[in-house]
Image (cartoon, rainbow, N blue to C red; front, side):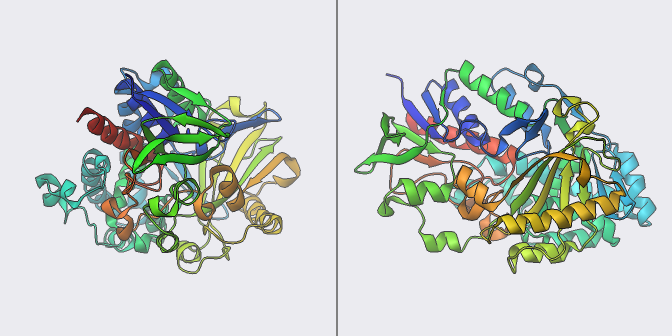
Length: 491
């Protein structure tokens, strides 16, 4: 008899788990509360513009390649990928910017031009980051984090000191580079992907290797193409996907899962995998005595940022922007402190714009631009229409001043998205956008467990558990939990 599995959520981790489990012969059903699939990677269309709602950076192409290869496919079977060159631009002030080239020799020269000897230092930094990437992305991230014994293999033990697990990221960067622009360049992935540089292990310099050595890519049609590809693959493998099906309860009997209830209907299954928000799953779908963690535990967690997002349609071209543009014209440390140390709306926020119409004309009408603006923000703070309007004014004024162009009078579509939307649409704990911060105390076995301690056959996947936040880690998370279920079912 075919073993049935229910998966809550159709984001990257849920679709990934569904594909691997269906391939292994399970009968898989995915339940999605929203009408659109993809979780935070949903998209929407309006007035001729197509907006990706969440992820916009395509890094670590090997993770996507490996996922599709596991099913005898290639990314090219589903979408066309192009490498961006420059990969991105960073503004430090009015008409003061760096373009980050895709070519490593050109990047080396850029570093050398800013700081004598920085080219050689970049070579050393990226060699170290490559080692961490190879160990981290081939060994560490595929471990389920259920026991310390998982890490007692020779390669990991031998690598402990070379991985710099206890060295703060900002101090590690400062050993190589002194110029403030170079240090900000190397530290930015940490702020936007989940933690303050001072609280993040230097292990995560592997992100610099991903962004600077491997490059920044774009799937034509937008990030939604990845969700479309994974959804198509899942259905080809026999996965049933039910949208507009919100789960109200995980049904248990004694210490065993017996299915779930969605839209008032019971769906029996032998296993349940939640790729929904971990805190929501435990606090709303399970009885108190069946939860892995209490509210005190969750309140003690360091959350990655939430975000204030603006989706803008502009009826003219906007010079000065690349596909990815970062605005670092104010202090990075201050903004990071206002996210993690003293949570509040930022004094002088850094922000990021994605303008996919620079690369892909299908995302906007002719002679128009599609703008996605993101301002990192502390999770769990107050979110009001008045605050959104205030910070739109701050951001649009800075954007126009730095680029020396009028944008506001040409906006023909505008939508905001912030903390309360993350909480409403995704049941996101404290309205977070990225999950848990990648601090040392929230790494590997110190992340929330992928397996329920009290209920057999209940598992968790996604950015609040191993291996962590981001699109590639979420895809890997789906495989990690699928492997655990396959192993258990085969015993």
